[in-house]
Length: 198
Length: 163
Image (cartoon, rainbow over all chains, first blue to last red; front, side, top):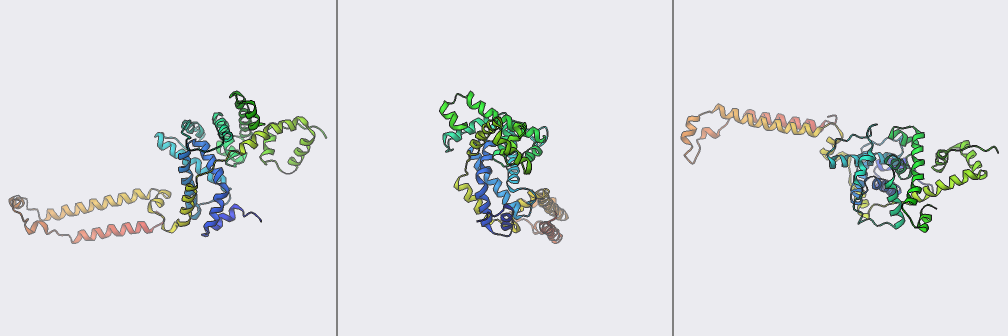
């Protein structure tokens, strides 16, 4: 059965077919949620932001604000990042601006480190990878999260972060190499390291 | 085949499906014959695959809330606050209108009282339980007109989507 394209699902939802939005949500909820979680690092906050993001998506699509030229998932991820920034701005009462050359969103959001994960149920492997990702330098983590989980292309990442494509690729390269190095430095038992990174 | 030097960044572009056409075909050919390239490719591929396994799902409750919202949301009857957030601060304008309305009512009331300003009579009669009729009979005919103007203004603002 041919998979319905995102743009057709969006058109269907704009026309009032809620099952089209349900399909979009089914396809992308994990990616969106994972991306938000790796940014804010708190499960409860991620649940709240996820709902806020998707409700805003509903309002914008039904209100006719969706730009068909862009891909759906990157568009949602931009909304998610901006809402996360807004949240931390209100929480910290800091006049942080969005997406400027001088502002590194992952530097500011990194202050949410070590939040409670009591309610998170994930296997040990997943938890381990997540922890390693959070140890990466901010710019490398940003590129890695946006490429691996938000499905943004390197070109889109470069545009968002105001760097060249080569720089974005370079940061990704270092991120992946550093993940392997971090796994070694954190004294993972040999069996587990091979299980995680081969 | 002549050995071509591919960078780590090229390997990443291939891994993430950002290499196209002839470039992709050529890379795949070299991958089959260049052992060093294959080893570097494997190194990155393992990490990328493990990263892809990291999937954190939202709770069922969150998903249900979102779907319920999607079913019931109607942009035609969106809350006024919602409209005001999207457009320039309509909520501020509304608050200003309400404030002006309050000021108008107060000023109208004050001007009505002043027309019947009988301070000495008032002081004399305050001890009595029933105020004199003159104190409570205000000239409120223009007050009602003013209030209607404000109501019309609010209605106009609410119905004008360009504000």
